[in-house]
Image 1: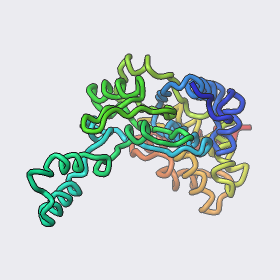
Image 2: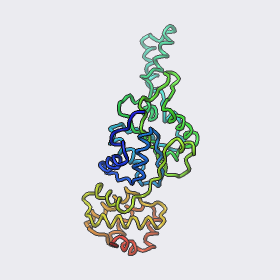
Image 3: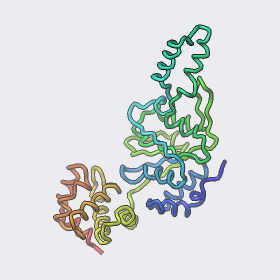
Image 4: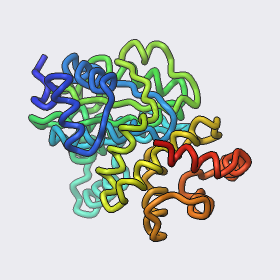
Amino acid sequence: MSDPHPALSSVDSVTAALAEQGYFADRGLATTIFLAASLRRPLLLEGEAGVGKTEVAKVLAAITGGELIRLQCYEGIDAGQALYEWNYTHQLLHLRTAEATGTASAATAGALEEELFSDRFLVRRPILRAIDHRSNVPPVLLIDEVDRADDEFEAFLLEALSDFTVTVPELGTFEAEIPPIVIITSNRTRDVHDALKRRALHHWVEHPDFEREVAILRAKAPTVPEQLAVEVARATGAIRELGMYKPPGVAETLDWANAVHLLGETTLTEASVDATLGTLLKYREDQERVRREGLTNILAAALSA
């Protein structure tokens, strides 16, 4: 087992490397990332949408210098779309060229068939690309929103990630000399099977606490005044406690802070909150709930010392 990247060699170095990229992880997440990198195990990140699960993979790719390879899961995705397929258009063109030039004879049929199913016509999809990366720096394979796929696809993933080998019948077996860093995310629209959880290390990603959200705002929205960033972080935390249909994530907090700032405000007011609430909450029901609770209460939470 090869040593992990130096920036991932301890919990403290992981925390520092993430922070340098503008990602402020709590101790639990940094510890799990360190263990996953050291043990060469996939990391399953679960949590509500918008808490920064996908961003972990992007930041790890930036830290290690590895290629970010993303497999976006969706209902109906199958192994072929994740693994490989043959470029039938180019195969057909090659065959027609051979026929036009007179090289597609019975005597050369076997050789022509071998050409058609050679590496030249193989289209590598994300999992095969990650396994057959041929680089000294392992890529970061992001398997995003695995909960959108079905049980059969999960079973395929389990097999592919167990030993990082893939067999293409026409070409043979591909095996990763250096396994990729694998990040699997789930919004938990359904439970991921226990078998996949056993294969991976698991971490539940929470919304950031107040201090981390302020730090994120400082890093990602540096033009927003300090006081406004603090008030937005407090107000967002208070709104999440109201039981939203879709609690605002970090991206929405950043949008809200920037929106209020663009209106020329340096502090939250009832008018500015009411005018910009749609940048924070994307469902009408959530906006109505906040207004029913009273914008005054939200402002009180935001302005509390």
